[in-house]
Length: 492
Image 1 (cartoon, rainbow, N blue to C red):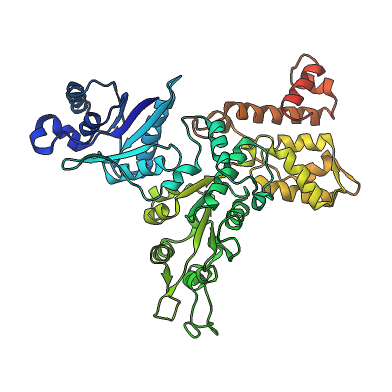
Image 2: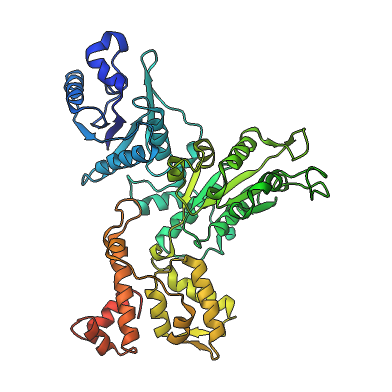
């Protein structure tokens, strides 16, 4: 296994070239002289001539291959730009074929924002060793106080399937609390495995995912599977509370504290004492409310509106959002300190379109429960369902099938009922197909399958299930070739 050090080049590193007697070796040179690395990957936003002098100098100290990734930052504290550059550097390492690598991120060079991004990446998406250095103490491994978060994401080094097996092997054999989350796709298997691990540890959980993916369902399962499972679970829709009532709703109030306060009232945090509070759509909270919630999480106490004495509360926070909070932090719409307080165990629920194999299973489950097993679905109707992109995810699928059940007088839901039940969706543009971001979460096979299912379903629908006509529409040689395609993509 090759050990790779990835770091930003800092001003102290550059000064060390000519001022070594004043500043010492600098963080990067300290690291390569104190620890053996097989390769250095350095990110730089400094002038090329200064960087070239630094590389020549460090190579004279320790012979180790060095790759430099030049970037341009509008500001050395811009989280979004730093994040993109850091991830790009990591991906360049994994892009090398046939390499089993162990990553180390150096926290000391560069700005505090750069260090913060390294911590976030090491503890969520790209597990890595974190080091820091100083002139006085040399190089040490950084002791970050939320190690557990590294256990909740798939390792890029060993592959998702191997990582999934490792996670599941550490779990109890039964998890009935998660039975309501219908799935069989590898993507959701990893989500459930990470959620089960998170449930065992009393740490904050942040669930990200598009609307309708089932974030509250997962949050409830995490709570029920946790040591707090028999205590209260209080769900709060943060986007539905008027700004003027946020403090009263979250922290409670005393009788007479304001007009309409006709009795003492406990707030959501107090109601969730010893249990879990689920803050749904936390990204909708105004900044002033974020400050007050952060204080409760830090101090473990709150003050009701109209009272002066604090009340102790012990709650586990499970937050959810359909936004990407790190981008909200960069845009100044979400507090960085609250984000890092919440983002310990981070779980991303994939959209339904990326859950290969789950759609048919969900259709069967929904029909069984919503129609008590009295409704079936025709092949033509199922083809339409399989070809739909489901922008509203599982919630859209559930409500579509509910409408179809209503519109179907007989026992079989046919294509016409499904078409009436579906809401129209804007057709995908070439940018949506050809302009997707590659890397974490991107699968070429899934994308090809998405396109294939769309056109196969359309052809079967327009040909009224006549395979010979459908094959002609798709310019396939014959109906047997079409049948093979339908089987391949789960439409037969």
